[in-house]
Length: 178
Image (tube, rainbow, N blue to C red; front, side, top):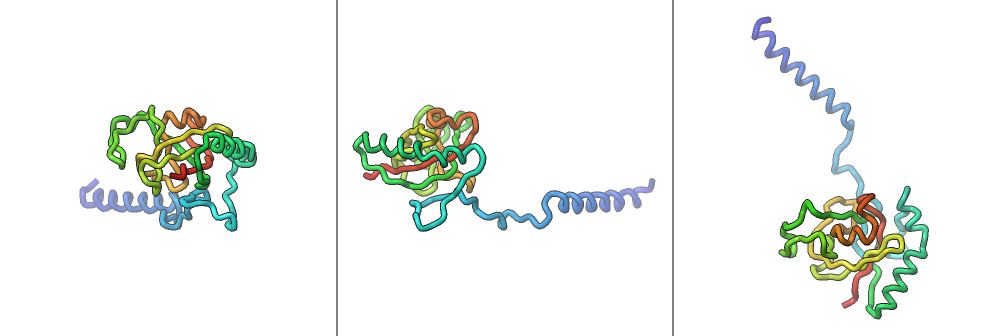
C-alpha cells in the first residue's frame, strides 16, 4: 500500500481505538464525582449523626459490642485517661517503607508500634482496637492517603490487631488525654 494511505489509516484506527476504550472504561466516570466513603472519620463521633455500618467480614466486629466494652475496661484498668476518637477502616504498611523518612522526620521501622494519621499531632498515642485486640501506637507519619481509611498502622501493630492477612479492617480509635 501507498504511504499516503497507510498513515491516515493508522491515525484513524488509533483514534477509533481510543474512543472505544474511553467509552468502555467508565462512561461518565470522573474521579472528582466519587463520594467520600462513609467510613472516613477525622473528628470525634457526634452521637446525633448517623453512624457507619460496615458490610461483610467487618460487620461482625462492629455488631459485637463486647470488643468495645473490653477495650474500655482495659483503658480504665491502666489508669490513663483515653478519649474516644471514632472508628473506621485501618490498613497497614511495612517493609516496603523501612528506612524511609516519615513526615515527622523519623526513620520508619515496621517493627515499632507507630501509625500514620492525617490530623493528630506527631507523638500522640492512639489506642487502636479491633475485635477484642488492642494496641497503643504513636503517630509519627501522615496518611493514610486512601480516603476510605482513618489510620495506617505499622506492620508490628497490624500483627497484634490481626490485620496482616486481610490488609485492612474496622477499628475503634481512642486518644490518650494528655
